[in-house]
Image (cartoon, rainbow, N blue to C red; front, side, top):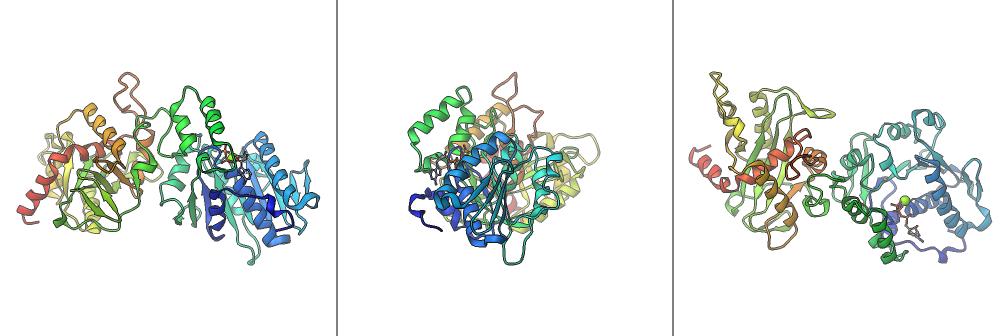
Length: 463
Ligand SMILES: Nc1ncnc2c1ncn2[C@@H]1O[C@H](COP(=O)(O)OP(=O)(O)OP(=O)(O)O)[C@@H](O)[C@H]1O
Ligand SMILES: [Mg+2]
């Protein structure tokens, strides 16, 4: 870069961001003030420097107000680098760099705003504050504008804070895919993405104490929003039932590659919540004897939800596919084959009620189809939820049993964090929400006294 480089300083997050190879798209999913917007400006600057006349950068915000904030950032940064040699046309919102690179700052709120960009080509697309988009269709349309000559890699960068209108689709698409800073294939764009988190705490370019004061006073009655903004935590939504106990940092663990061997004292079993009009949800639960596995220590009594089967309709978390027991059983057996485990575990009491038909109970039908379920433990709903919250909160403590959920369990991560409280009984989950994953998880915890028996029964039965 040009002469005045010594004045520029990136924070550690931004330095790391710039080491991500250009072939990866990036999601900047941080708390407030971690340096995402400045990081985006640095990415634009580097792209412009590198590709010159071929670089065509589009930066987008939902509102004009947001745009003018970013204008100031670019004026400061580009001004330091180029002095008066980089020209900003404030009426067009366009930067022209000395080497011919082009950068436009644009506003996009509705489908009619999109016509401003239709048919135009860009090489780097930057979407800041993407959490303001309640759903992703406009941003997905923009992808078609990414094209350039072979010598310029095209790239999309998306930034958002948790707690906004788009929280849910963003968390699903970018956060609960892979551990931070490790690439994953994002199916919608068919591109490899990297999730790059940041918080104000790692931003050495600000007075952090003062910034925290500011954050606290900006959400006085909303501790969950404060947490989302302070910690950049995507597992919580404001007011949610598990807001206090569930945290991405503590509870979300990388996908396992295999189950631990049976003779090492782990209990591995299924926990199941049946539905037909509603989805059936089944977890593979592994309960630790106090052991190391997949590169970390799991305190004795900890539960890990290793993998999941949810029979919801595509794009509808609330609706089941209308499968009967035999169909669900066959999918469960396939999951068990994949993990090389017995198709055995626990299910809720309702599965054991005799339905009156000759087939007997749902559990009987499962048994017939080769899936063995026992009753989950007896605690009532409220007791079960309390237990779940306690295990969630205790995750990460070296001497306490915790509840850990693999990032492979996408139905869990798409539903449990958003469950609301029952308005009349604050200790209960609102049953109008999509609670099938939470229910199946709860049964898995209640099974803790039964886990051993399930295995023994099955070993005895010689399956
Ligand atoms: N490289 C940098 N050089 C100088 N100051 C910086 C740099 N990066 C960040 N800052 C300072 O930190 C503040 C927060 O950074 P930035 O606005 O990029 O964070 P953000 O993650 O986009 O925040 P928000 O979530 O609120 O949009 C900026 O206002 C600026 O004062
Ligand atoms: Mg910002």
